[in-house]
Length: 145
Image 1 (tube, helix red, strand yellow):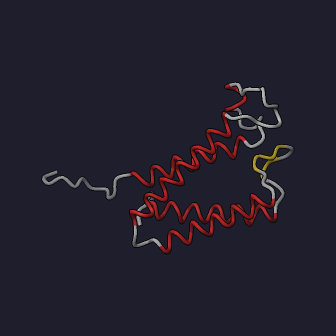
Image 2: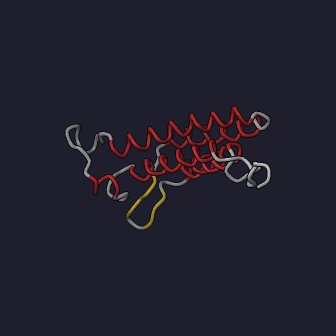
Image 3: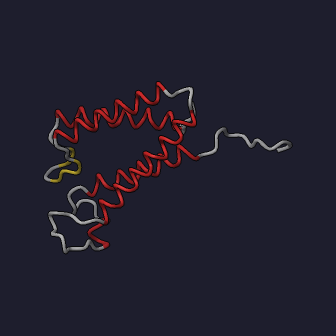
């Protein structure tokens, strides 16, 4: 199993999401001092736990079907990138429907509620694309090279 294969992506993602859901059900939030960087309500925690278990199940059940895992990773990347970009650049109810985010508001992660989660969705989407489309194998397959 290579490090960035679709199967290893789903194993790592499944484990992280399942642990995130379990910790979220036990802890109130992750942060330091007065700042909380990641919070989730009970529904989000249960959905993280469920998504993690589904990702682990997919990695195990589709181990012999790498093309299926590849295209599932592509779908996961599209979802993660869409949700992350929309969250960072979309409308935030706490700011009002007519307020548009400024560059500083968008990229100062501690200033907006939920911005860390949106940034993590983008990172997750990019890593899913890398796992889906990276070249298989480490050697050059051309003859004579």
